[in-house]
Length: 408
View 1 (tube, rainbow, N blue to C red):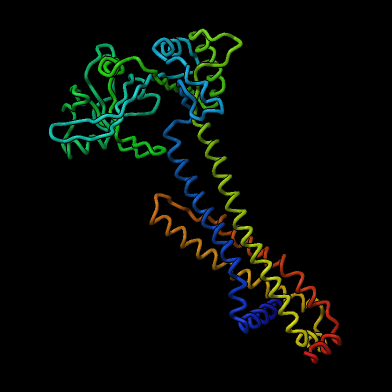
View 2: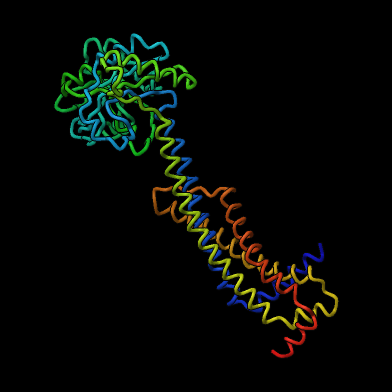
């Protein structure tokens, strides 16, 4: 242990004698570690945010829609797809055995008004009472839509928390009326605050009976059908069952592809994973190039140091220093240089993450894994690029070293 500490002391002393050289040598390592740290923090923050938001889509919910969330290269072939309507909804609701709830949905963004106050861009959605079961949309105050609201096409609505706050300013909205596209709806429920899901404000919504929506806004449009599956383990079975039902109802010939899409949370998750993997790979390559440049710099500087200190090496060997001692000293100097660069890179990575958190919508999260990765890279650079000059120093013959040192 004392031998290791003595080796590190000698290495540190030698580096402090050449501060400018050591500083310039660490620059590449600092840049590389900072890059890896900052990008890993951003990705970790995105992972946390994405995981929290994607839960709002529902891991056990399938979405029957006219178009896929992620179109393939033949997107132009989707334009001629027929709309989804009540025929498909009724078939799924009556025939599907693997589902717990089925909610049709049609949405339109529009201004909502109450007296002299209004809110633009509110997502007005026509749906049924089973929307509550599909999404767990239990009102904080009042109630959600009921079968009677649907049957009689009542002008009742359930509002999101932002709509309630903006239009009623702390007053109880239950029983009050809001105007949507010139028509009045009575507020029967207020949903709790939910935040955003993938950029969509869940609190800026109003839900009305889908029949009332069709009557007031027109029915010649495709509906989306959200299906709550009894268990995530049955998603594949439910998808197959729904595909068969829809193909029969829509009379799709056996030799033709589906003219509808069944979307689910995993599609977005897989896309996100592929995007972040590409981002992380790019960051690793950029950081790796910086570390490579830093490593080459370390090797060059250490090689120069060996040449300059030939006499010192000869004297140490002449008084009994073994090859392992010389190898350890120069390798330690290389590791100390890269280690200091790694620590500075980690510190700058923390600062970069803090700056991004303060100045952008991103919320980076510095993880233990990110710190370990940065320090591990820097240590590896010190070892790999310090081996050659250290081995060269250790291989010097003491007589030749003293003679060469006397000449210089």
